[in-house]
Image 1: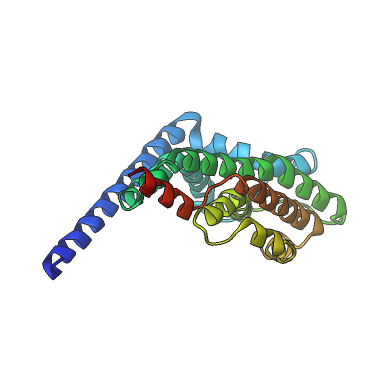
Image 2: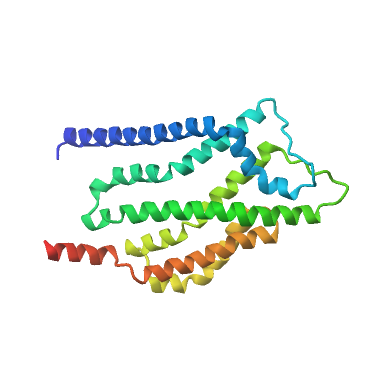
Length: 253
């Protein structure tokens, strides 16, 4: 291939990448506008704030210290909700960009990968919302001194919530990551079992860094991470490696 042909191929890849990123962004913006109009950014934020409000004394509310914070924070939360709802389409665009360079048997992974990744990410966020937030906030409220008036700032709360959502969403992707590593032939099931102890220690280290400095939230992140790692190993036992699939494809041809 000549240098000119290589340059044209590189430029065509950049154009395709730009187009697919643009499609993903447009889809997110369309969903954002719909959610902003109905049910509204304020309703979405109120729903997100329920775990915190439930732990506060009767009649207490959250505060906003910034001038435009009451508007900007719900908008950011609505944008996050838009991204989550469009995640399957975003993942599809990413897969469609790399698919031309894959084997036929690798392309068959598209649908299972997109569905499982989206489902696990959302499951992680739901676990965080319904279990982690309510447990942690109730614990903090129970140990807080009576002389302190709890009035959390909505900007600090939204930043905390988004960080926790991201942490638990990524954590719940562990089975997908493990299966992909086995599928690619990078590691074997036996090796993953061998390093189980290091993974457990690493899970608690990650939990200590990501979550608030309390034991409950750390266990609520590290525990599922270890369980999901084991699930990934269990599923990986039934997965053929890429070398096996390539050999099968060549034999069929």
